[in-house]
Image (cartoon, rainbow, N blue to C red; front, side, top):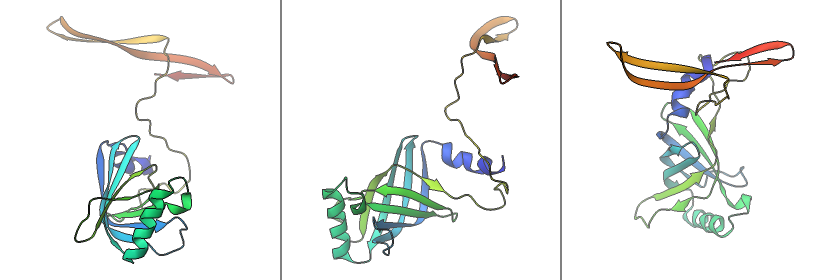
Length: 183
């Protein structure tokens, strides 16, 4: 698997942090220039909890503040929310989806913004990416299949058993006149 071998450690190592040279928060209308730009990071805390922190500079202070207030007052109006895009220090571009950023404190310089993310995706390209399109899957956590035969692992030192473990071993099923073995 040429593509996922490279990405597996970046996407399945939890918790992890993606340091970003540039983050851009756009209005929900998408075609306007970014409202906030600045460095920051994406914090992947678990497989379903992703946050971001951004050290932002607004294009226009008044407009930026109005957008933050509108996003907070209208949480169910998608066009009042923000779209986050980021570029990490390796040059990988990340689409972070919709978010409602919050101003963290009242700083004298800059606008520290934080928020939750519901998605995180990237477009893989380069020499490590397969040229033929296809589907690649990473199963994390491990897939659980009911097994009809158990596997027993015994650890011993000088013939004295010190540990015994039973785990699923094998399951054979027939599908469309073919026999498939899972182990």
